[in-house]
Image (cartoon, rainbow, N blue to C red; front, side):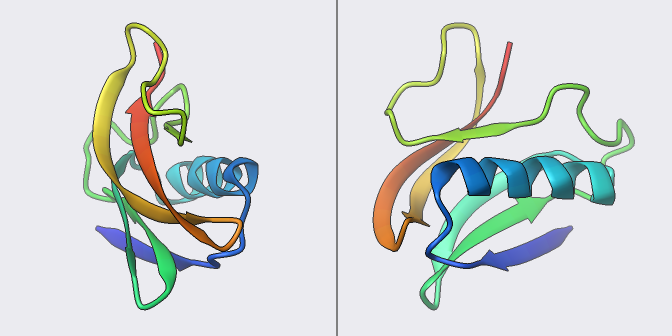
Length: 92
């Protein structure tokens, strides 16, 4: 398991890019999102035998992910400096 504290000023696009880069580099899927000590927390499962997902996981603040997506988890994260409700999901 790898846990990353991310700059609270990242935009949603920057957070999604961060997730994609970490899933690829750490060879595992996103497993949780949240916040701690003023940072967004991103958790990647580095022990998953399947490795990095073929389609990167995504985070949305729109409430509901696209139809058919598998929800990974929900939590409060920082987006552009504001604590925001978010949903992490595996796209279709």
